[in-house]
Length: 130
Image 1 (cartoon, rainbow, N blue to C red):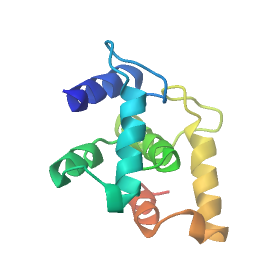
Image 2 (image 1 turned 45 degrees about the vertical axis):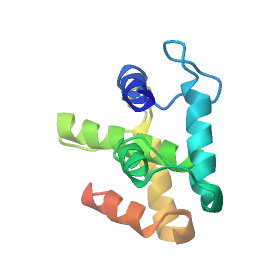
Image 3 (image 1 turned 180 degrees about the horizontal axis):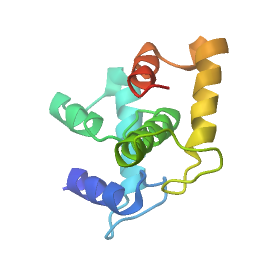
Image 4 (image 1 turned 45 degrees about the horizontal axis):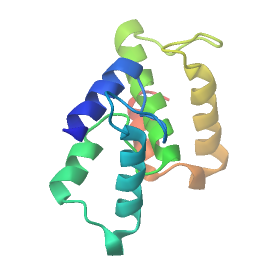
């Protein structure tokens, strides 16, 4: 039930809920925090593999806030490219995000601070032509 509610929340808001946010009376933000904590402390993890797979199938999901925010920008950049067949212009907003600023930062990370991006993130960016 919470997985379905999380998918619904993402569809409505274009992001994951914050820690104290509720959706239809359910504390989804706290639930996400609990899932992340359990997963990231694997010796105590009670999350079933199929539940992990379901969460990881969500385009905005991340096991940390940083990873989730990266996935959010990447997801909306993918949608932008599908809709416009070009990279966003400087200062152009899409779904309230300034994707060109994010792209610039990712290019700088890739060029100068490779440890900031995972190999998977670099590969995903390159698939989009970034």
